[in-house]
Image: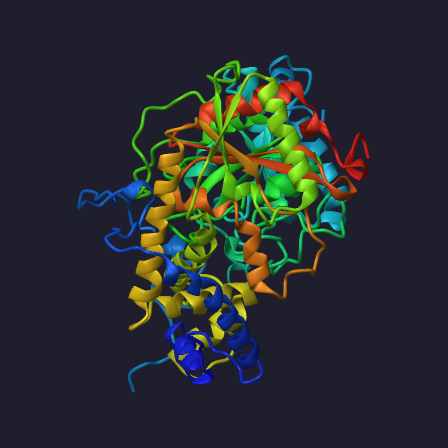
Length: 95
Length: 488
């Protein structure tokens, strides 16, 4: 299957990536080339095969629900683009 | 000294024939001299490195020396190192000074190793040529008009050009083995779960694994001994007893069964690569190993499966880069959604955006089953092929890549052609198996050819032993690109 320009705009919006009108034809060409490559998977007979999500089917280990790290917000916020009163600043979302 | 393996450097440090400060300065000087030709490093900070070297010298003077104490190690810029700029070769992290150490950095730190610098790479480890870096492409020391491979191309070029005695890397689909092959050095990706992913910036979490580059297999064993180990902060870190990866180095090859997958020796491999690999197999037979043909019938599907699974995981992992908590933020935007979209569009390079879009698509409603689940089912078929093959052999051997290093700019505009460089390397990642590349010959124009070895789960020591026996009988691993040899 091949992706339309409208479809790519929708994917880009889901991915929170702005794609300009100048770029979009090249993006469409490249993505359709990659999809043609991965299309080969459809020919594989995988009836009854369990999907493999992790190498060796390792299970994600759960940890105790306990505090293990102290408050480091000053350290971590020291590298943030914009901080005020210990809060990360973003453009207003509620008028 | 610049050609010496780690074992010799450690002996020289222990006998006080050289100090860590002198050794670190030697390599810092070489980096300063050759960085304009190779662009192998993103960050070098001599003050920090020399302070660590002084601390190592104090430790050595007190008699508290470990095998890596005082040794300068170059780290791929994917590993967070406290106080060091850690960019992952991306504009979006171009101002990110890591507030903590990756587990790998902690492990080398506690061994007393010195951080020599942070190496250039494909942005977020996405690429097979180290041309996808915000900091410009890395050049191959054997021919600076060619790529070093990728994504860990800076680490591989640095070790090959004697700018560092050893280096770390990461391997999601071949990112250690392919550049090791292209640059004529030794590199290993251990079994998935042996090296902690904590502080290693995530690309495709079910495939990402840290590993090492060095002059030879003995040095790789030294590095794995330091790097591996359980870490509770990585949810897929394996709880296993510590092992000594050097324990099989002296083991003779008599009786070792080497599997030759017929799919790896068919069409697609260049004639010069085939000649070098076949000569290496003949050498292994001469050393006492036996060979047996094995089959990996689904290997042609490994690149398609990888280029669904890896982008899917990447699109999820890279959602965190939003310009809110750290990193680059677009200077101008209308509202919050526009800030996200512009920050990410400006902060990510072309290949990263491409993979995020592919990943978003294959995970989106209506396509998830056809692409993502089908790729995961094929992943199991590929892993099962390896399990079946290892019933008949101990180690699999074949080419690391279908070609020698290709010219800079040749493939960068054709993503599918670039992805096909990974044809022999992605299978072990999908299965989670250990794999390595060692130099095994010279191809066209004298460029290095890599021999890939793949082992069963936790067979690292056995593979390193086989590689070491090969290196005792050959000298491909000792060759240095002429422009970087001696005291130049």
